Amino acid sequence: MVTATAVQDNFTVEEFIIKPPDNMELVDGQLVEKNGMTLKTGKIQSRLSRYWGDYKDSSGQGGEAYVEVPCRTNQQIRRPDVAYLTPELVAQFGNLATLPQSFPLIAEIVSPTDIAEDIFLKAQEYLASSCQEVWLVFPESCLIFVMTQNQILTFRSGDTASTQQILLGFSIEVDRLLA
Image (cartoon, rainbow, N blue to C red; front, side):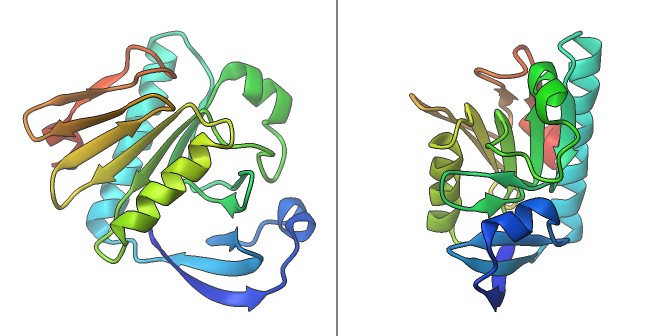
């Protein structure tokens, strides 16, 4: 995840859905720019997307892994850092400019400028909007929180983080992802 800076007020959901502006989210009726990505957080974002993509192919589960593509929650339009879409949802929505719901599996890579409370609120927003699993990746503290509707799991350096409900069977050593 990256810090957002408001750049325009009164941008409508309909306008955003049709032609989503690059590097922007629609939060509380304001068009906000995502910023704060560092080389380290960008590397982790790219790495996790590649690992999820490779796993969905090798496991035969199919679907698609994405980086920073827009989706609609019950409240806003967000751009998760990494997201996975099941084959069924790819067939249904794969050609739209903005996914009309949350992705089933989302990861937010926490940047040094992010506020922890905001990160957890964003995860709850995703989970309230049809997302089934959210990974919150904290590179500096070597932590990964995996959140579902029913639980929050914490994985630390030395642990192996694994999916709980979507892209079943995927796991990654925390140290390998965050190296």
